[in-house]
Length: 198
Image 1 (tube, helix red, strand yellow):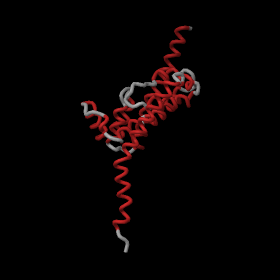
Image 2 (tube, one colour):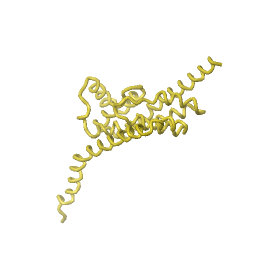
Image 3 (spheres, helix red, strand yellow):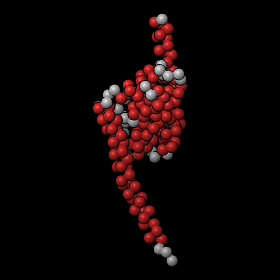
Image 4 (cartoon, one colour):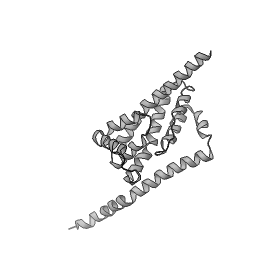
């Protein structure tokens, strides 16, 4: 007869390693992404301008890059609004940007997954944590439509161990709504300016 302790020993070792090292590795990955984005931006500050020429793919890539910065003020609203004037469909610019934002915001989720120590217990944190704890994906969806300070929500979702696919889908859908609105505002605003000048 097989000893049950022998078969469970590798799984106990794996759980111990995952509990101790996985958060550290995830945090290092997030830091590498952020530092990589800043390094690329310092070496090639014209990169965003060059990517604009790629249309929908450019909007997707810009959105990934600018949403991957955790708790740092790097917005892409003006870039997306101006890109919407260069392509036939502002809606597709918004949808491509929303998908990129969902991917980029995963850095905040992963940072939170690696541990809560990186964010203090402010009143804002407590309120947002209660909302995410109570409403889950619905809170993430609603908060991702609000333009500023979504990074903390991603960190909270990671800390609470909300399933990553739920976080991604809620963020993607909410950000898509926000970015479609921004793209249309840019396209219509630009047309209004051109009409005034004509």
